[in-house]
Image (tube, rainbow, N blue to C red):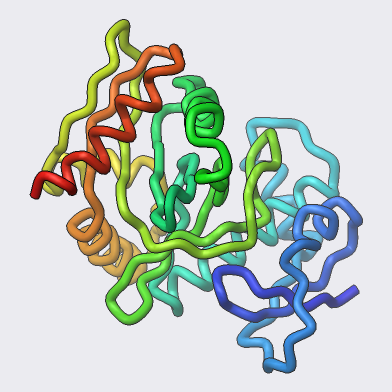
Length: 241
């Protein structure tokens, strides 16, 4: 069946065969009287290709979902000054904070410490695959249906404010880092297209994004005060400037 969605403030239609993909995406359904900007669907060939690419054994429904995601990502990268970023993203007092790290480092655990310490001031934007778009010169972090193992996220958009490169340590530490030091690290956390023109666009977007947001080296243990140290480093540095 064909459904209409609004994801990252982009309206499009998708032909969905399996209920699994529908359940993931249903919070982004829209009945706005807006003409869809494009259409996506997962063909049998797309599903077969996802099966070859995936390191995990999924059902056909699971492969359909990843194929739809892949098609959506490439279209928005090409047309909408957007890119996917592998991170846990939260909204704090109207600003988006992103934590990125290798899988298994503890992004979700650290996110939980922010929820524990700051309560209703924190909203999870997306715990795995938010979309970042540049709109009128401003970078915004958008929730998407693809939210990771815990399915945490919200259909919201928040101005990007800080990006933290997270690692584990015995003592909590946060320090600012400059754009030239983080471009290569940031590239490892997004989809890198093979097409030269798309790759060039991505590099230009990333450079602007990393220049606009505050970037931090964040080393934490998993004690409660890790979130407090991170918060003070991110927002305290602003107050001093």
